[in-house]
Length: 138
Image: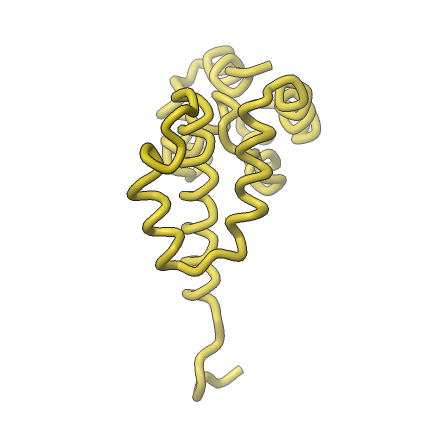
């Protein structure tokens, strides 16, 4: 069920932005999770479950069920797997020109692709920040 997070947040007296603040995740990420355009990570589901009073599995299962029916989500997931091997420069160019690369894609599919690209870009940046550098002491 899409909007499950916003439903649970409201049930707990929270707006989605308030919930995002409590779970310490950017609002845009929570919004994309809620809409089903970004795959929910297990660590997020654990934090969210504690705040919302549900088991993490319930959150993950709700979105997996809706994902199975959503062809745009499937396209976004497939794109994210392919894009993991792209260089940073090529990734940046694709993000800048997504509309001309996929001119016939509907807005939902284009947004799913953009979300997947952004997720990959963010993950690459996190890996760079945590990568040991020459001269670092363990």
